[in-house]
Length: 265
Image (cartoon, rainbow, N blue to C red; front, side, top):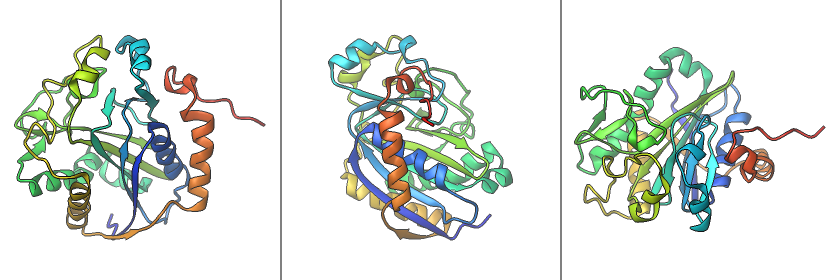
């Protein structure tokens, strides 16, 4: 499937709740035939939990609250991720894409732009499976490793996850500029992966977020052979995101327990 034109939405650093509300709104409103979307965004300091995470089993939630660290639950799977020193992306595209490539194949195809991005920084990146690294499971994203996780020098960098609907698919992921290990490490009651994973700072890359974002869009254009049409959220997207923010992503029942909010009649 050739997708030659993409909408580009660039968001500034905002709350975890708003970021996830926007991602869900974009996925919900996408229809077959719509222009696919690349969104680039940053986070205020936070933890994000995978759709089926049980954070109380891995995180000291009281300590997290005392330190003023926000949390949010994603609609995608995967483990717990640290945010605040990263750039994230989300892709929304037709469900037919995943049917054509398959789930694993879609990861391989879509993550190529990230590998190209790291190459532009002078880094040798590849998929964990291609490097012969064994898969390992963990409730914490950085401490686990799957076939299509990206590794540099055999160390995992960032993470990516998907959600599929009948009409569309969402893939989003994180590019870590740095990890505030001192702030986050003590929150976890299981190995965090902060020591075994890597970040751009560990790899001695110190470009500004603006420069890195520019390189990301350049890598995407080249890899996907795509034209990027930059714009803002549409009215209906922003409206649904605000509704999700108020009813879901600021709701502890969703963020901590994974319970969908009750829809009012």
